[in-house]
Image (tube, rainbow, N blue to C red):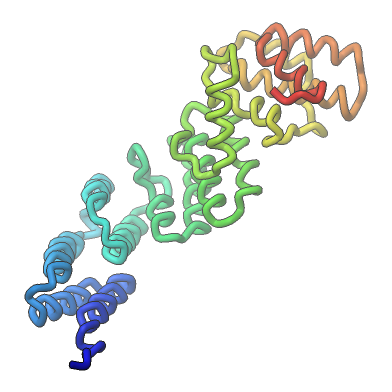
Length: 299
């Protein structure tokens, strides 16, 4: 008996059509196609389960009133969406949530911990460039944490294929506001490996934390550059030693910049010795790593 390949594949073809409707955000038509498969093929468990799932979410998103909806409600929907593994349905729902969120005034300034932000919704949709713009726009808000959003914008750049350019943005985040960076979720593999390496091998930094020391450790490992052509003023750095407003890791990065400027750009052995004494005074273990680096043995 000759097989009817079209008939055998018809449920699959129809379910693929339903997925196309979902990707086009037409949930109603997707549900109608799934119901057709369910009715024509009662034994098709996939169609029956997908019908129930689409119907449930169709009712949820159809009930959203942008004029009265609150960001907290959208976040709850997103949390409930974590159990949905059907890619096309997830895409349709995320698109809907993104559209509703975008109707709010200054939508890029809306953030609910740990990661509810328009930029993250755009990332899930694969719109990395738009996500980076959304995260950068959020930086204009005085209430949002700069380190967090700078790093997220660098994540979006990384995912869009601009990993090299993203390193400079990660460095900016680490220098300005390391405590708020979402470090376990950083998308750049080099930065993740740098953090893990620092945690394992860097000594004498327990009081300040590995994340804050990553700019220094990153330079030692050849990842981050130093702004050698615009070094800070040494006298100002000396006055900041011990200041809570200028933590040791940031101060050490600035001292490192001065030291390398004096060693490689404008040779001044006397001042260089003074800077190195301050570096050793602030963190002797890291200073030993620095000496290994300039002698050609990376720590």
